[in-house]
Structures are given as C-alpha cells and as structure tokens.
Image 1 (tube, one colour):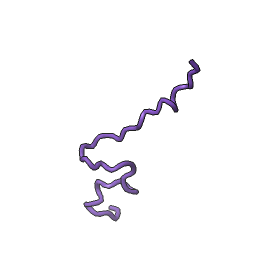
Image 2: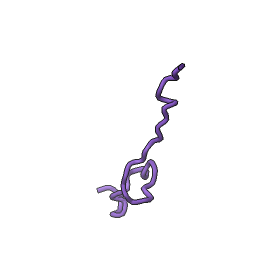
Image 3: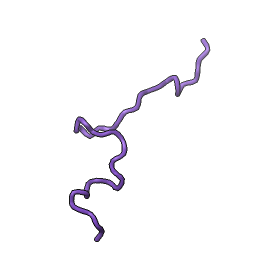
Image 4: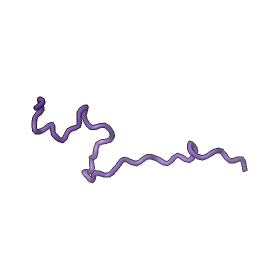
Length: 44
C-alpha cells in the first residue's frame, strides 16, 4: 500500500481545482452569458 493517511482519502491528487464551495450546497459554478461574444453582430 502507498504512503497516504486517512485524512487524504477524499482529497484529489494536486488539490481541488476550481472555485471553492463556500455555501456548502455543492452546486456547480456558473458562467456569465456573454451574447456579444457568441452571437454575430447584426446591422439593422
């Protein structure tokens, strides 16, 4: 068996990437909708 303690069992190798769950609700991070980047310019 490798070197690791019981407290490291739930911690992924390299830490936890991404935003921290400060509210402890476990929801996914959201992205801002930016239509100016996703929709072509319209010339009305």
